[in-house]
Amino acid sequence: MIHVGDNVKKIQTLNFIHNDIGQDRNILSLPDTAFNTFHMVTKFDQWLARKLLVEIGNPPVSIKLWNNEEIICSTLNPVTRIKIKDRSSVFMLLVNPGLHFGDLYSTGKIDIEGDIPLFLDIIYRYLHERNKHSLLSFWIKNRPRSNSLTDSRKNIHHHYDISNEFYQQWLDHENMQYTCAYFPDPSMSLEQAQIAKMHHICRKLSLKPGQKVVEAGCGWGGLARFMAKEYGAIVKAYNISHQQIAYAHQKMLQENLAEQVEFIEDDYRNIQGNYDVFVSVGMLEHIGIDNYHKLGEVINSILKEDGMGLIHAIGRNQPGQLNEWIEARIFPGACPPSLGQMMNIFEPWSFSILDVENLRLHYAKTLEHWLTRFEKNINTFRYIYDEAFVRAWRLYLTGSMAAFTSGTMQLFQILFTRQQNNKLHRSRSYLYDNQPN
Image 1 (cartoon, rainbow, N blue to C red):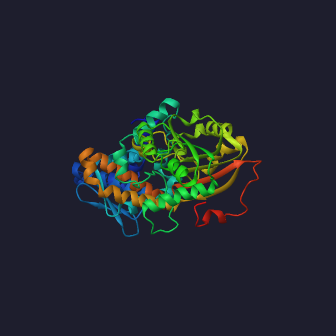
Image 2 (cartoon, rainbow, N blue to C red; image 1 turned 45 degrees about the horizontal axis):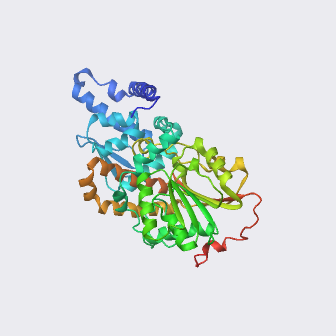
Image 3 (tube, rainbow, N blue to C red; image 1 turned 90 degrees about the vertical axis):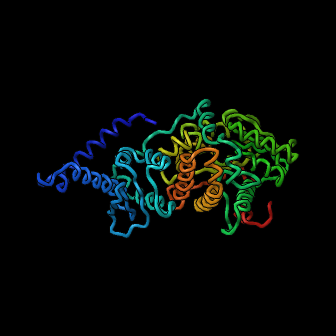
């Protein structure tokens, strides 16, 4: 995929390489008698690999070239190694690492030897320190794809409509929660932690029997059904993924919840009605920051005077763009916000923020469970899809886990209400009561 500005960036990169080679006496000052083509090409290969490591910040990682030559720049012993299988791949990584690393790994042109999560965690940490001074900082400025009414459906279809059977192989079996679980006890199973997450959300919202709830972006409907079964709520849930809505509706009928739960295949911008509770879990990072004001407008139009709301979303410590490869190949249109950017949902309508919780390490644990289950079903996925698909999804899940362990990504839960609502808890003890309510 070529984005606007790629040609300019390539010119900048070529100029950078040209100028830097000009300063490298090891390449340009060789005696004529020793200056043969093979030696020059080898030296250039070494220089490209070194330049890549330097631009990352000299991490404790080595590069093993296609001729088995190993390049090390760190003063620390390498803990992992990246194997690059051809010369063009090194150049592609320098030209646009944000996009090409994922593509080259997916097609098998590069491999990671050793612990993949550790490798990615190290790269994220070193890039964070190096970012402002590095050539690689050019590649974090690409804007995500549009999230208009039409484009949002295309973006969601690309990721969520792969097939329900695919996700069933590695998500929790009962509720298919494709969002951060909650591990108050690290020894919990994935299923237990997802149930704990849903209880945690319902307690925060002080959910009571008979209350009307609207959910924006309901996934496979697990939370909506849980709120109805466990808390007696009346839930209307919106989603634009056709396969997810079909699955959610079928499960709702199987569990005899038709009088309490309604699943609607429609965009959050079309939500109407009057509700006690608004909840959105894992949708915000997909709607585009430019649409936050619209989301706030929708919430303001539907939430009762003493209504409560909760948004659960992947976020960042400061504004920035999602990795270009993930946005292009896995999650088109996605952009995790900073807390400051999220305030564009609340401030125009004078919503009061009651609680902000960061569950970053809980998401890392969730991804660890997902990745383990994904790997257990790897042969099935190879048979149904292909090796490039398997490698892409392994990289996506592993990279996401590393993003949370390194602190590159956060997981925010924000609880809010209208400013005049005084029906509030005096402490947080109600959140940690052993009882469901």
